[in-house]
Length: 156
Image 1 (cartoon, rainbow, N blue to C red):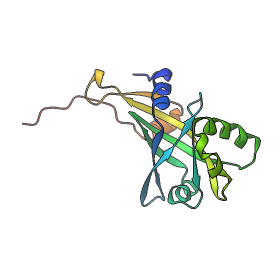
Image 2: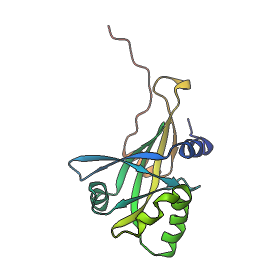
Image 3: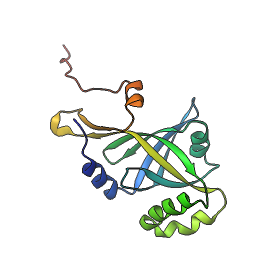
Image 4: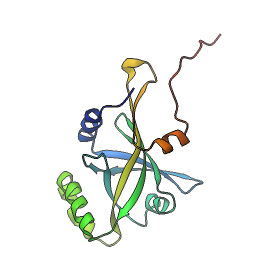
């Protein structure tokens, strides 16, 4: 079932922390980060560029995220410090987390943007494993052979 944009926005507004999975193509890393978002469902977080997650992102920008009942696959990029785009995206982040403004003035603390490729939301009203979905990149979506709910036989 197609995921409703308002449902996603409602969940994002309610949550303040996302769980970000990255990999160096061999070993995974998982981090909890505070995030902001825009109306295009792009997510923003700050982090020091020498952390494991950011080193992983530099080498492999594809990430998996959990936010509440949402599961998201996305692609991450660092926004160039001081650029006009940076200033605009920082306004979004600073509005949600004004107490972190000064942290961005420290060297190596960067602003990152996650562009969603697909978003799923568990919807148990339609069955035990049903997830509604919102696909942004059809080619990516097909390439991961997404799980589709189906009925399982009882064990004998």
